[in-house]
Length: 312
Image (cartoon, rainbow, N blue to C red; front, side, top):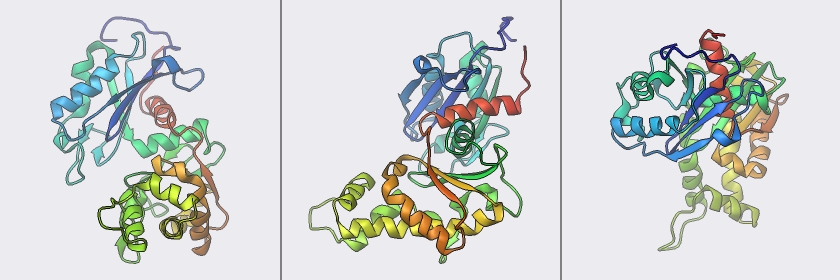
């Protein structure tokens, strides 16, 4: 240990979940595999800030955790990112661009001092999937595809609880946002902006009326608005059609869905299942996430055990 301390094998695992608007820090109990509730820290994060400002904010959240944890951190972070080296590759995506080319791992270790000997990064969708595999809806499925629906479509193809990024059975990089459907990028058809744009086409707005956001479109659909209902049907049928060939190639037995848009599960599941069936993916279960908030933290903690040797 860098500080000469001896930490018991039962010491908690420190983790970070870095998102576009918030960073969450927590300690994960190695016995239960779940975050210690009293340890969870969630702080606002300006992803359009300077590199120093972003790293300072992340580190401040991390330093709020009680001391006495293991010095190996698991960090879930969105891509594009070099997860092996800890260097940001954010360009032309509208967030974290100041971290492009920055050694985020070194920056965090410097700020956390003796509390961080090693920092292990993984994709946030992979962290979510691993967490759902160990403590949520993906449990018991040897091959499963997990999706996070929000500003875009995050995804992870898990085999035996580990993400698969290469090979003929998964999309490029193991991520469905790189797929196309009918000649268009998938996220042009399935995303927050795609839902809003589709509704605007089906229900032209009156002068002075703003474009509703996803939760408002969902409320309209539940209240019988035909344009809102058709918006959800169209968008998530498209997702099912794009995903189905890869479900079959990967031989997945379940699709687990999380993310902010998944709060409208009652409107998502029927067209997603229909789209999967239309393209041949009829044997797969379509399930809502059980640990939506905790899963990335749980997954990040498991990742530290996969990628770093434990010390008694």
